[in-house]
Amino acid sequence: MATRTIAGKTVQVNDEGFMTNPAEWTKEIAVELAKEEGIEELTEQHWKVIDFCRQAGMSSGKAPTLRQITTGTGLSTKELFALFPKGPAKKVARISGLGKPEGCV
Amino acid sequence: MKKLVILGAGTAGTMAANRLSRVLNTSEWEITLVDPNPVHYYQPGFLFIPFGIYKKEDAFKPKQAFIPRGGKLIQTAVEEILPTQNRVRLANGETLSYDYLIIATGTDIYPEETPGLAEHEWGKSIHTFYSLDSAVALADALRNWKGGRLVVNVVENPIKCPVAPLEFLFLADWYFTQRGIRDRVELIYATPLPGAFTKPIASRLLGDTLEKRRIRVEPEFMIMEVNPDAKKIVSYDEREVEYDLLVSIPLNKGAEVIGRSGLGDELNYVPTDKHTLLAEGYDNIFVLGDATNVPASKAGATAHYEVDTLAENFPRYVQGKPLEPLFDGHANCFVETGFGKGMLLDFNYNTEPLPGTYPLPFVGPFSLLKESVINHWGKLGFRWMYWNILMKGLPIPFLPAQMSMVGKQKVN
Ligand SMILES: Cc1cc2nc3c(=O)[nH]c(=O)nc-3n(C[C@H](O)[C@H](O)[C@H](O)COP(=O)(O)OP(=O)(O)OC[C@H]3O[C@@H](n4cnc5c(N)ncnc54)[C@H](O)[C@@H]3O)c2cc1C
Image 1: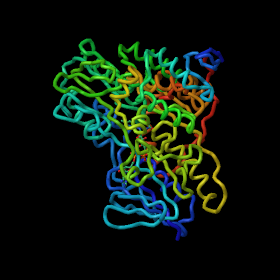
Image 2 (image 1 turned 90 degrees about the vertical axis):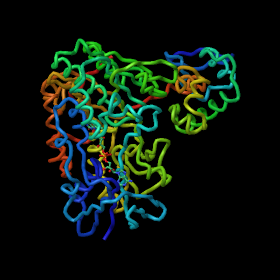
Image 3 (image 1 turned 60 degrees about the horizontal axis):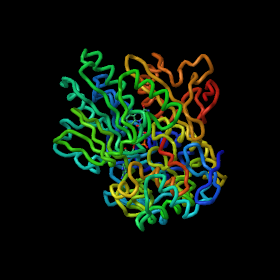
Image 4 (image 1 turned 120 degrees about the horizontal axis):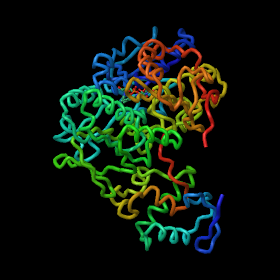
């Protein structure tokens, strides 16, 4: 397992750049990871989504699906794509220090 | 008399009723099934109807023929489950009380949830094969089609039978080849997944097969809407795919009664213990088949293995003994690949589908993750087994409920 330093903190990551220990996450890390995903500034709306994903991820041990995020935050799928362009579930999972969403079976 | 009430008399509910009536003392137990629809569909048959391999009559039978002796079927819908009162309220005005409840209300398609999908072009240039009538309509459409671009789109996962869209494409390749118009047909698979299937090794091997069969994958395609007049599907990240014929696997959701009763997640699936199949938070409600949220394939084969484990656990449990964590997420799927061949996938919660032979090493007779003629016969033979062995509540000879590594090859 590789490590890297983000926002001054050394954390464990997998080969796709997802953090593997959500407990190592900080808000400063989120800001840096967001920039890597092309999001220059995290607005209140972004944080609402990140906070929800942190909560869901810590209680279930898994990154939430897109539908869980829309149901949980009240934002529409369209709004989520505007906040986190291309793949919102995957992007927000990475920014929130959670593993890659598992998709399905 | 102790009362066991089963909601839904489809694949899982029917198997459970028959199986449990064999292992419980029927002079002590009253088994009641509730389902509004008198018709039992053989859903795996829906796949073959568009290509004229099966006819409509091949894919259903009356539910009444599969009710165990001593059991009964009430033909009405469940309106509400009242788990704190151990009762269910029915659409016919009756209220049933239960000692134990089994929820087996399955999952269904909701095409109206995607804008543009189920509007004026539905049944014309837009189809599905996830219900019997629409599969029949698609057969007519394919028969008269002169060629063009056929797009298969999965709206959102999970769906029941996650390999069915791939099988549809393989069969389409075969069907148009037979008709001599394959060169005039373009086949495209627009899927929300990053590749052909949900698990990496199978995804790679199935992906290779798609490529060989000249089927193009449009990955990570999350559909936002259909534009039925311009004949294109549009994704949330603003990609557009044009079609002449769209075959959609619409949004799959659990029964509305689950949500209405406060028992469901965001897709109306019941949070369920993945090894014991008890509904989370309840000690007398079990959930079987497509209605659960367990991370296993939504397939008839999965439901069958679930019923196997319940038949072992339930008689002990009702005598006060603890439930054993018997269910391991076991699924096997025959994947029809056309040209008289098929593949077989066998997997569970922890082990993804691997190549090899099944159920016996070297001998098979089925080959895993590889096309063979015998796998195709396995798939066609499944219909006989479904009605004559599975629905009667008999175990399949030689096949234990838990997955086995015997005959599987390690892959890096
Ligand atoms: C095209 C297609 C191909 C498939 N191919 C395969 C395959 O090759 N192999 C395989 O293993 N599986 C396959 N499947 C999947 C398989 O058919 C399902 O997983 C299986 O039928 C699930 O069983 P179930 O009992 O959970 O749901 P169902 O069999 O769908 O039964 C649910 C029942 O609940 C009833 N119900 C719903 N709401 C209520 C209510 N409010 N009150 C009372 N009753 C209600 C319904 O009327 C229905 O009878 C396929 C499915 C499709 C659509």
